[in-house]
Image (cartoon, rainbow over all chains, first blue to last red; front, side, top):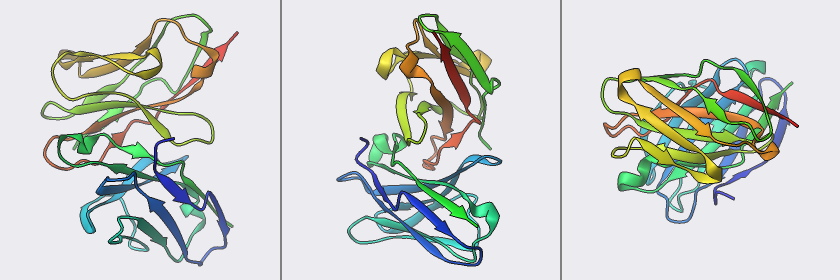
Length: 114
Length: 114
């Protein structure tokens, strides 16, 4: 158990809909990262938040957005969903300073768009 | 831009045999390197990491990896595999310039035969 929790575990929705994925980092970790894992794209970094502020952006679509709240949990919002958005979405967290590179991953949310 | 190549998509080894999974990276400076393991239906677990210093690093579950700058490689090894090692293994690289996002390889699926 990494200490990172993600809800829900599974999500099935239709094209055009909007969903919210939730992540709670390990206690004390200030950074949260979102990754997408799909068969065709592999594991890709989407976005990072540090202590409530966006810190780095990767291959995140404009239809996707994220935020980190004062209690440090994070949400990834996916809108106007397409079939190709079906994937496993991971959240990871890390501490600060030199340990920031050691990321601990949650179990993931499997999104199926039908 | 940093990148990681895992040339072997799928490897099959016998239980008790030795294992080496290959990883090559592309990065202009000394990278931060990681190996993660993903069991079916699970999140990613950090096996080991290399930041600096001794080029042979020990990890959990009896794994080790060796950083070879001249070959831009960070191969993962285990002297004797167990059936429970069957999983997907990912090599990842992070820059050391304040952007902590991980860039992952495409993964190597390990199958263990009795």
